[in-house]
Image (cartoon, rainbow, N blue to C red; front, side):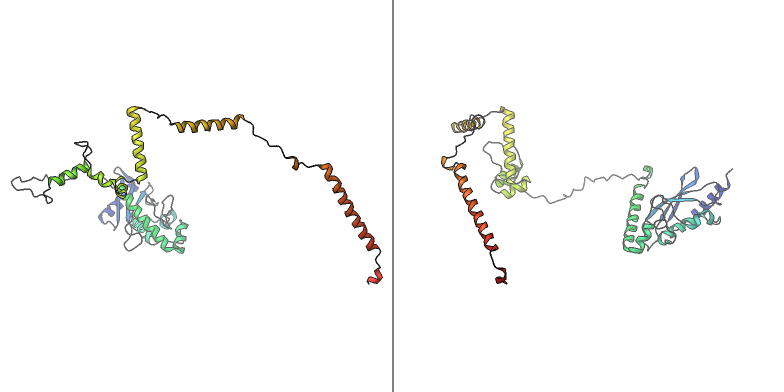
Length: 330
C-alpha cells in the first residue's frame, strides 16, 4: 500500500510524461525511489541562456503536496535568484507559506525554466549578479555564455555510454580480385643514379671508406643549412662534436694527459716562484731621504717670530683707534 504522497508524485510524473514541456526532461534518480528526481532544463530560445542544459535535483517528502519539493541546481548558473553556493532557487512559491497544493510538477519546472530568462531583481539572493546586470550588462551576458558552455561540457562528460548490444557490426568489405586495383598515386620511373644518390644521402654506412655522403657534402659548406638540419648554430654543433670525440676517446682508450712543452714547464716554474716570494719574503720598505726629514727645533723659532709680529700689529691698530677724535669725524 503506497502513501498519499507516493500516489500524488506518481500521478504528476505520469502527467508530465504524457505532455512533456519543451526543453525539460525528467526521470527518477533511482528506479525504486520515486521521491528523488533529476530534471534537465534547457534555456529558452532567443535568450542569453539558449543552448544551456542545467541539471536540477528534486526531492519530495511524505508531506507532498501539502509542502513544496526541495530543488537545487547541480550545474549552478550565475543568476540573481539562484544561490551560487547551494544552487537553491529563490522562488516565492517554493516557500512553505506561499505553496499551493494545486501546483503540479510541470508547473514547478516551467517556472524554473522561465526564471532563468526573467530574473526577479527585487528578490535576489546573488547580489553580485544583480550588481553586474545593473552596472555592466555586457559582462553579465558573457558570464551567462560561459555558464552555458560549462553546462554543455558537463553534460557531454556525463553522457551515458552506448549499449554495446545496440551497436551495429561493421560489415567487412570484400575485394574483387578479378578487377584490377587502381594505384592510389602515379608511379614514375626512377633512374639508378637518382636512386643511388638519394639513398647514399640517407644511409649511415658506407660500402667503401672513400665514399662520400652527398647530404653531408652539401651541408659542409653551407652553415645556414647546417643550422636548419641540426636545429643548432654552428658553434654549438662544433662543441657537441668535440665533446663526443673526447668521450669516445676516453671510453675506448682511457684518459691520457699529454706531456707539457718546455715553455709551459718554464712558465709554471716561474709562477710557483712568484707565489713563494709573496708568501715567504717580507715586503721591502725604503727609508725616507734626509732632505725630507722635518726638524722641529729649527722651525719653531720662526713660528714664534711670526706670532709676535702679528700681535704687535694688532696692538698698534687698537692704540690708533683709541686716539681718534670722534667730534672731528662727525
